[in-house]
Length: 137
Image: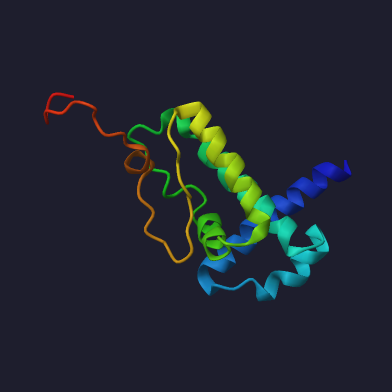
C-alpha cells in the first residue's frame, strides 16, 4: 500500500510544482518538499520528464492532425527551464530513439529552454514530399 500512496503523492506534487512553476518561474519554494519526497532534485526532474514523455507517447497514434502543445504544458515549461540538466539527458535520448523506432521520425527536443511557442506535433513530424513536382505528392 505504501507504493500506491507514494505514487499518488508524487503525482500530486509533480502537478502542483509544475503548475506553480509556470506562474512563478522558480522551484525554490518547493525544494524542501521535493527533497523530502524524492531525495534530490535530479530524481524529481527525471520523474517529471517521464510523465511528460509518456503523455506524448500515448498520443502518437493520433498525432496526425492533433496538437500536443497542451499536453502537460506546465511540465513542458519546467523541463524547458532545466533543459540542459544532466539528469534529463538519458531520458531524452531514450524518448527520441523510441519515437524514431515507432514512427520513423526523430521528434527532436520536445522542450527547449526559453521556448514557449511549441509547434503542433504535426508540424514537427511533417515529412517533405519526395516528389520533385509540387502538388503531386
